[in-house]
Length: 140
Picture 1 (tube, helix red, strand yellow):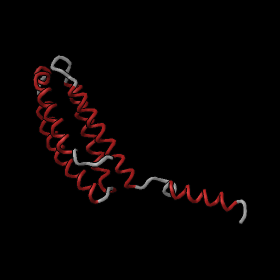
Picture 2 (tube, helix red, strand yellow):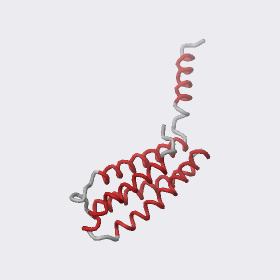
Picture 3 (tube, one colour):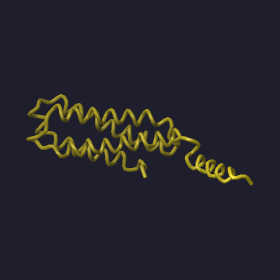
Picture 4 (cartoon, helix red, strand yellow):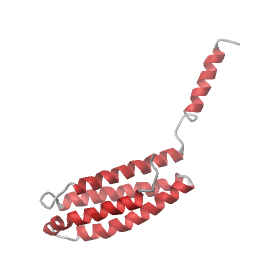
């Protein structure tokens, strides 16, 4: 046995553990979905932190746009997910997208005064819809 054999064996083992030099498409897709899910939660938390006195139309619209972008990221990643996870994400995305469109349509068509008055109710509906839709999406 030459001196290079143990080094070569370690190098091969390291390559196997590293997944042959990269992350699988499925791992990347799962990461994209989970990152987007976390960002949606962050946006909802920010919206929930607003009050009638602090809510602005631009702030609400910005958060809703970010959520829409995150939902698109999830949809784009679905094709690389395993069948079970793909189904979870598709169902959650469809449910939450429907809820969000209804709420976003209500909020974005209102005046600044009306937005301030309705933001608490709308955000609570959005948060509830998010929890119901994405509760079963595994990011663990």
